[in-house]
Length: 119
Image (cartoon, rainbow, N blue to C red; front, top):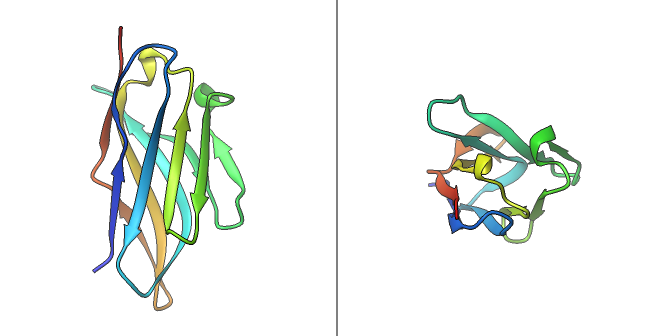
């Protein structure tokens, strides 16, 4: 059974940093695009960043130059390094990955990890 687990959230002061991880477990799959989304209370879920299996990245304007998405294909894990955090970055962050399993492409979501930026 293939699963996606995201982790690394927490409480941090403004200007601080956090690193989120997104690990796919199971067997017989290949990881394609990995993306991070976030949802703040009362708001729609929005794309933060994504990276394809060639390493090309894309970021929301609000996080450019502060967040960095990366991946380790040997560990089937994606990361989101978040620096210079602001209170408006507070949200539940969700990892999404497109996994190819025996030729079938499926979208998987992590359970979400809370990021709170507050003094």
